[in-house]
Length: 234
Image 1 (tube, rainbow, N blue to C red):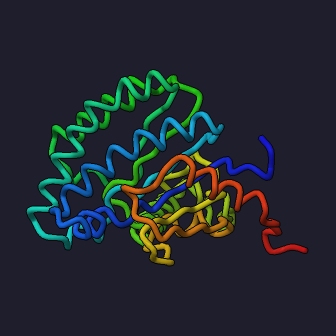
Image 2 (cartoon, rainbow, N blue to C red; image 1 turned 45 degrees about the vertical axis):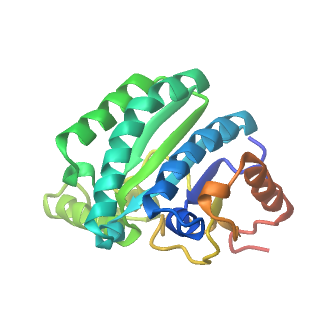
């Protein structure tokens, strides 16, 4: 893989609700259209040669939203899980998730596991949805599991380094983020992949997620290619 090409792209898909409101429609309409954009970006990412695409789908903070919106998002997730199989199989995409999915209902959890199983042998790209995900929560849980292994003598504290700690993260079998994109005009990371984005390049778009296109993805990649990544060195 060309070092000037992003191996792992992560996207904060922001602005669904604000986009819909700007059109005089309900926020839920924005989430529906946003799910359609995911399909186009997935296909485009495969064609561009991206190997890992991680999408911030539902954060641990999103539970603070109105209950009616949360119900819609959960129903949309169930529907999309059923519809994505053909898209993933046709495009060689392996599906995975990060986050605590234990809080979802059994139908959602079953849909997630079935889609993972059906697509596990696809090799062109890995698409990961961050569901009930928060970076601080991930790091806290990783620290707890590491402490438990030290306590039970499975791990010696003196043997712990960054590589050891990474094995306790949701993303233990994924590379760090190279390029992080955020739509919607905000310029913050919002508790997303805090560890994994330590040396990521950030590209922000003012346009809302429902307006985001494969051409915009290419623009972000071109911006990534122009930057010099030093990783703290010269």
